[in-house]
Image (cartoon, rainbow, N blue to C red; front, top):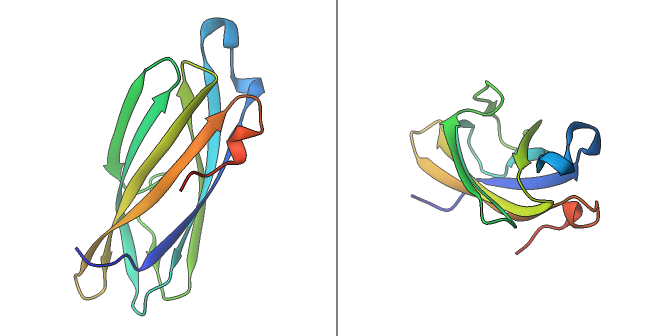
Length: 129
């Protein structure tokens, strides 16, 4: 696999109205912006997430596309979407990658840096490097 032709930005947030702390349900949304920084068009084919919460619960999520789509991005083009997850604790982390194929058939794993999910609202803005 080559160097990634994509950049990724993440904006996580806590959703208190969809959470139930007394039932250990903490719901988060995250908005992802994927930008094609390469010189050729590329298509996002699949996603892979590793989600861990402070209670020690871990989830692995793999699947085709994002929100039911496999966007094809021309050079300089971005795709933005919002999805979500539920944790069993008020804080946790998420990181992963997108599998991308460019118009010449080159394959890339685009890393998504670890970001913090925090029910207090402050940590939900932090991205770890």
